[in-house]
Image 1 (cartoon, rainbow, N blue to C red):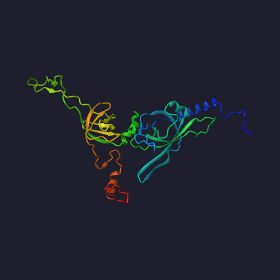
Image 2: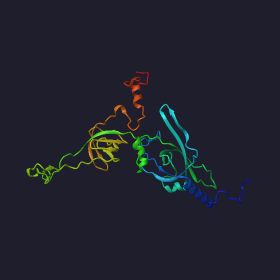
Image 3: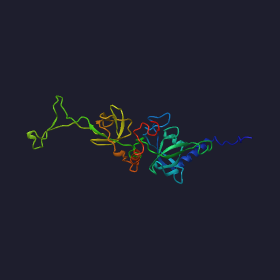
Length: 314
């Protein structure tokens, strides 16, 4: 025996399109506006499949449905040997046709991020299920995207959306360097004589004491621009800067002491001083960090002068 040849369950394109239209409209009614951040791999480790220098430069707006009706899933919040860990999980549903119109990739990718404005949190995609609704009328209409709360590990986030980019600013490892800006001289004419600003309003102008030399305009670094070392070729993004110091994150390599650095947008030039070490390796943007306490206690237990303090051989 076989199924009836008079009835076709999987080849009615009009019905398939109708169901897909209903699914898309339902997500637009009951879903949420989220942002999808594709991951850019800058230095992928082919062996481990990791990229510690990955970045997120674009956020695509798209509507998705939240499949978790009773709150977050996963292990939730718990105390581990590493401190408080939050492992909230959530499942987003997106229509396949809506995803295709985004033009990012053929399907959502594991490792990419989803910004959920309702909770102001970033979630990392762990798995994408494409058969959650099993071939209704012969076609798949949606992707189920299983995500876990994103754990920031010094990735570059520059989407242009302030609320998303603030995650990097609040959690990135910040290094501080003293800088001495180049070209502090005075303007010269072609005959090498100095340009003088004659202060005619001053009562001392008649005696020549009101005149002053015109100094070169000193360019300063700007926030969020990239600086590059001319010797080490290291680069980093400036978080804040003033006339004497710069604070940088996302360093690609180690800067050399005394080398000249150049800003990508300001074109400012400066000589880099030695990195300022935070007292006791204090993490300024994490007041609950216990690394100082742990390091102090460990120094009294383990002899780190040995080449391998964890081995019994000498």
